[in-house]
Amino acid sequence: MIIAALNYSTLHQTDQLLALLNELKNNKKLSTYQENVMIKRDKLITVTKDTDYKVLYNFKHPGTGTCTELGKCGFIVSYRIRDDNVTLELCTNSEDYTDTGIHTTISSQQHE
Image (cartoon, rainbow, N blue to C red; front, side):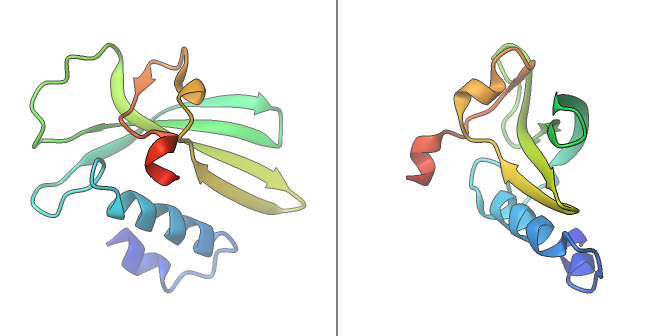
């Protein structure tokens, strides 16, 4: 539903948001077509004031049962603001998750 709404949006960042949401939707570890996945923003980490942020999201995937790893299941999206443009990137480097309280099964090897 969000992807459909963004198709008609006039936001400058629409293309980046659509690309990010489609990447999440197409990732077999993060999406499902059988059950709803509840995703919510966990916290915002300022990397560089006014320009670089990491937004942590956690989710509950009803099809996986109880997670046994420490922390919350989730993912991180980095936001970079330059000259009134915002770049969004799904963090796939395990170092980005260190000391955040979020763990993920995404790895940079899956994207190579």
